[in-house]
Length: 141
Image: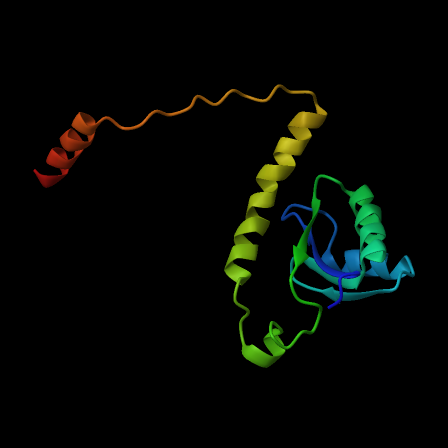
């Protein structure tokens, strides 16, 4: 892949009303010079960086709080990563975890849109040694 090309995941949040098939059709209808592969979580798009940027900007307008994007290191169909050649893909568990967490990101974005203040999170201090010793003694007994 050259420096003027990019491959990105476009991921739909779990509670999106938009489906991967609808997302793929929407991107196809843009008539951009990108390769599109539908997946269970959205699509993978590959092409020139400016075309990918336009694609991402357009689809995020549809549902900005439920459509997310992430760079992928390999182009669509690359044999180093394609499941068709190697079985289940390394890294899928990480992507699946990130996908499930998108619901939390979506809720945070909605709170920001409503103008809700960001809650203050108190910084936890270190556990004192005496407290750790007490906990250890409780577990032993």
